[in-house]
Image 1 (cartoon, rainbow, N blue to C red):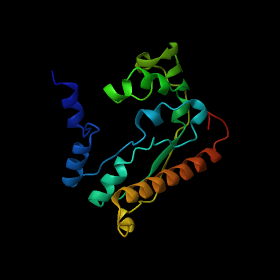
Image 2 (cartoon, one colour):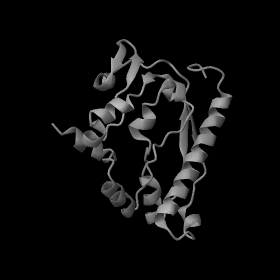
Image 3 (tube, rainbow, N blue to C red):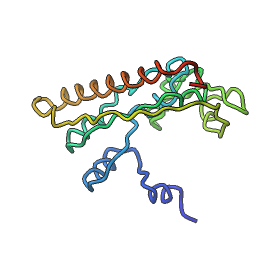
Image 4 (cartoon, helix red, strand yellow):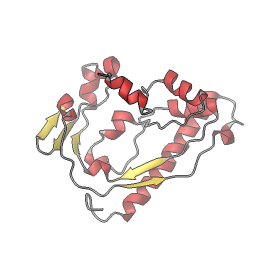
Length: 184
């Protein structure tokens, strides 16, 4: 029986590592990146209208190094299928989960049918609350427009900020169209 990693690779899913991302782009393929990772995916329900990339600028550096456009994509409603009550970032840091396993969140969530779940138990399968999810795809942000700047770190910082601000604007627009949580 094939290992899970082999199955994921066969459908185009690759590990979230810089080296792998470089290989994918150098091979001429497209790459879908979720820079916020667990920090964004497990943000509390009260912060569902915020884009949280967590200061992770690697995607911007990668785009600049390879001349790859960044196409911002946001969705509204996904954070309404699971209610994250607390992200648990301080606890993850206190026990070293961030250093050992790149885990920055040990959330406290409410999920059906289990009720309250904490930390690793939050990975249990759950019944998502019904929610209308709306996705918006933005215009490409071309890194070529940034090449006039000299310092690569400053360049990545500026590109990161533009992407984060663009995504926040897009997400805010989607939430302005929503009347109520869950039903949209």
